[in-house]
Image (cartoon, rainbow, N blue to C red; front, side, top):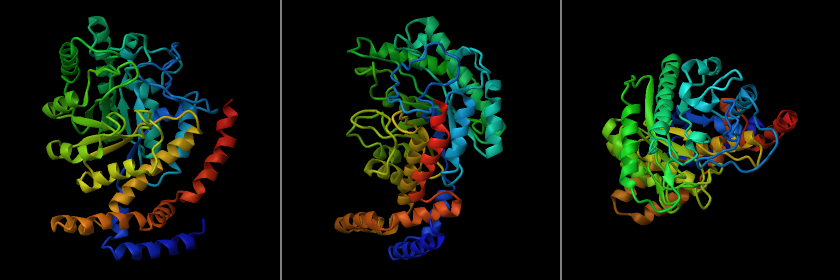
Length: 422
């Protein structure tokens, strides 16, 4: 794209925003300091590389589609990630699942994974300035086949997954300590029932006891931050999920952990954006997992739609910059996987930029004065201000492609790399 054209469009946009009391340079400076935690599992449809013989996803996880070229090993996944980071403005993190360790082709059981299995990831991240986060993997495993892990009434099953969760924390603390940036360890388990339960309390008591054991070993917050992710329902847990939002919110607030708000884990008519200010008022930090639900928790690629716009704008409005960790959590196997990553990550960054460019002082002044029509019209005006011109300038200054160039670059990579994988 012609730099002069982008620059001239940005100058006009800057003036348009300035008329509404918005400093675009200040907004861009704030955006430069924000990092997304890119989810590695979009690159291979949540398969991982643990050498498992099971082969199929289970535990409420499903990736639909069969677009060619998914990453088949760590080298291909890292190749795709390297390309992705050239398409995103800013410096971003990487979120790993425990099944993505470097196991050198050996089968390593999940209660035996160690920090050394992530040594090559630390090397990779160090070379690129990418910090790492971690997630325990409590699905797609024979010992999760009955639908329960940490809340299982089978002591042996429960002990296995408790050990896995402990190993995950050890890995996370090692990552954080080595990279000099706290690793966020997000815990989500699929435990629940398809039909009406008779003993909700019993399952939740077991989960609480498991969590107490998992989190007993202390780690410095500078190395490790633990987060808990609830869910309303899932595949095979339509009637009851042990780790509900309320359960984890109370547990996390009591024990000084982060609560994870996943934008697909609530009722479709429920506003996740509305929860951000409530949580931040009483908790120091929270983790957002950003996806796009279509009729249910379907983990579609994030788009710059109303839901994403309101979610990320509320992070800004609630003073959440620096207190809200931002992670992506979608997977689409029906389209080019690099393209899905790129569209989704850039959509989140655009939504953040839109929030930073809101005429905040005018909106708050109107509301304080009871001028609700003025507030309404200012929100409407904000929708028509030239966000795209500011975004393209931001991308150009960061040395990444403007919006009109992205599709061509993804298609080139698709033809040159992805489709050659067979």
